[in-house]
Amino acid sequence: MRPIIFSDLDDTIFQTARKMPDGELEHATLASEALNGSHSYMSPPQSLMMDWLLGSTRFIPVTARSTEALERCKLPFDDYQVCSNGAVILMPDGTRDLEWFETTKGHADAAAESLNALLSFVQNQTVPDRFRCWIVEEFGTGFYFCVKSNEGADRLDEVEEGLGDIAGIQFVRHRNDNNLSFTPAAISKRHAVEYLAAKLLDEARVPVFGMGDSLTDLPFMATCDMLVIPRNSQIDRKILHSERF
Ligand SMILES: [Mg+2]
Image (tube, rainbow, N blue to C red; front, side, top):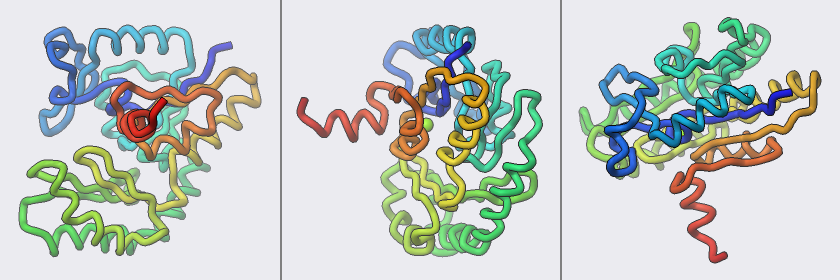
């Protein structure tokens, strides 16, 4: 009877070199290779934590990464996996849950025009080369839009409002550090986690942990029995540091 852990990946169990605590990079373990060379690493305590969790729980990644980006992770995930903000659920054998995909594909198709409008706004109405942006695709379908600055995360201020106006209430906005993304509201980590939890807890009611760093992780974490956040994460800074205890 293993507890279930639904967990975000980036900035929760590993991070890029520039976000590593001082002095920890030299003892770090490579966790994921990035196409642009900005690889991700686990600190020694994160590495030990993952050995422990992978050995004693059903560890289920719940990530914005596409299935392709998730494959670049070095960790031996062998249970279900939630990719592209809930758009795709991979089964333990690595194949996608087709029934789930048909549902989310329908939502993505309905949002296709808006996704393209978000893309063309950044491509055509901003200073050239200041941003890079794309629509994250899975199996030929575009699911969500994301943009990053080439000149520092603050530059995202310049496009956030304009994109928000285009997106309206049909999209959920995520902004954390140099990531700004818009996902159709009908597609979410939370929906995927609820679907999987219903399926897995039917077999045995074990404790369920939700782990993540971003405010946009909270909706899925809130469906779990226990919520786990990394110190100095976006959630930590927003909720804990803004309150007096
Ligand atoms: Mg994260």
